[in-house]
Length: 126
Image 1 (cartoon, rainbow, N blue to C red):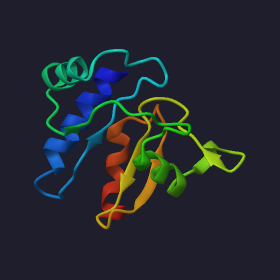
Image 2 (image 1 turned 90 degrees about the vertical axis):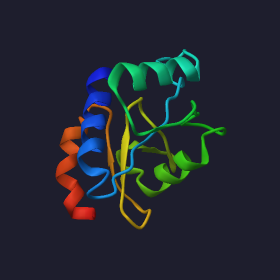
Image 3 (image 1 turned 45 degrees about the vertical axis):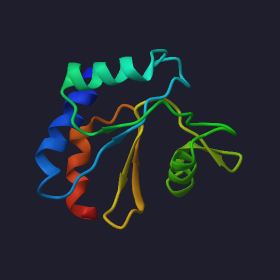
């Protein structure tokens, strides 16, 4: 799944970064045991292996008390079906959020939603 996801994200970035200002921010996390590698190894795999030109950050925590503030905010704004006892959580890696040009999270996509499926929503929010 990772390879296909990063290839599709790279294609979307190449297609829309100059024309629509698309920015893709990727935040690896080992919270689900899928990224035990160093930040340098992850970057090497994604940039060299998949040709990614979008922003790739260091590993973060997605859930719990130590969750990264960005993900606390995104989950608060786009909790969806992933709410439990008033708290939102990330169910698994590769969740995606669409943020409009005003910086507002407008849609949340689950792990299995391929990036190309998100493309249809670009015109709705940009």
